[in-house]
Length: 112
Image: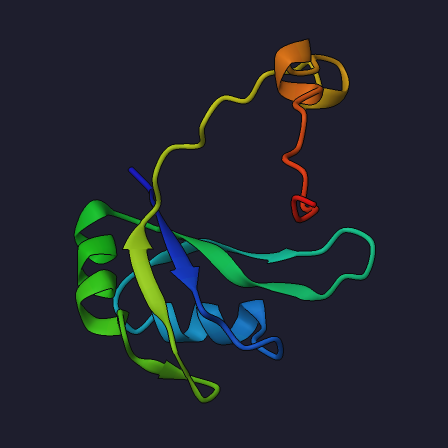
């Protein structure tokens, strides 16, 4: 059974190959996914690493959390399950109630 790890605080120059090599020191790496900005392809400075077993994942967290990679101390944690989001598009398709949108702002004028 694979266990997904969250890896944060990465350098912009970090590659999937570097992450795979680093995590393979602690056990079997099933996959590495470096998260990037869709439009530019630049790294968002975090990644997900699938380890081959929960034992390998715990070992990786213990050994690599806080370790240095490309001049930055990385954060390694067991990934949380992805939260469900509404499919309606948020505020654009479901605006807040009128009482929230049309609040009267307090006046900044000094009294005469």
